[in-house]
Length: 306
Image 1 (cartoon, one colour):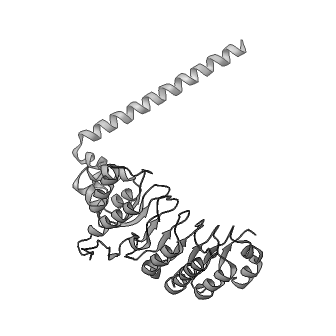
Image 2: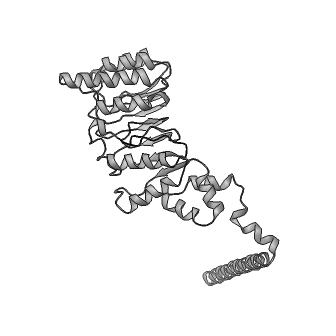
Image 3: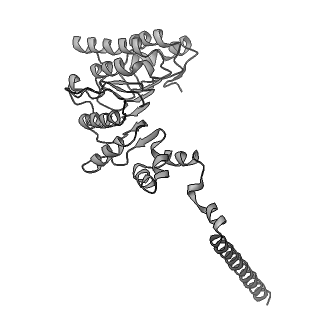
């Protein structure tokens, strides 16, 4: 008898709860419909009434396809998408035609692409050249080479991430696509096939403004098993020392850099450097980690001792 009474009371409470929910939803629906009939209230539900500072923030967090759709909605949204720096991260790892051509068209319509992220894509050297060329052309006052197609300057691009792009850095140095002046602040080349010659050439054009350089797991760098490699490695070290005067972060995880090479670099840039990653580097560095930590106490150093 008590169980039945409890069950009956529970059913009554549930019915009351459902009734309250239905009444609440009905009241909300009535209020909403009344607001929609009121012209003044309709404006409150219009996204176009958002402040101009909010719409660009929305654009900043959209994918490439969503940003395209957003800009096609109306002129106000198009201006919001094109009127501020844009962070472009492709969602197509293969970048095949016609998607790649569509990407180039999108880049050509935006003057403020300041960040590019091609992480884990199969972008090629030729495609990268075309991407940078499209960004340069979108600037009305950009000086671009004519006969040889060489890019002269791309000042608005601040961040370039090319991590884990297996088809990059396969061309000869004289054909290398990033051989242009860019005021980059962050350059991520981790897990790529980049060589000492290519890196030295890039840093010559981009190193002066760099604050973060990521070379993690770049196995072709800092190798010195023959005279040619010794010479090319020295060029890379010299380029870091000479051009990267404002470097704050240097990521060398898993590289072949030696203790002597690291000492040469740190001796010149230790005043600006805040962070250094030397995990999984050569054995001679790992053995001397305590000395490195002691010598450069003001730098946050990640090592195998962490």
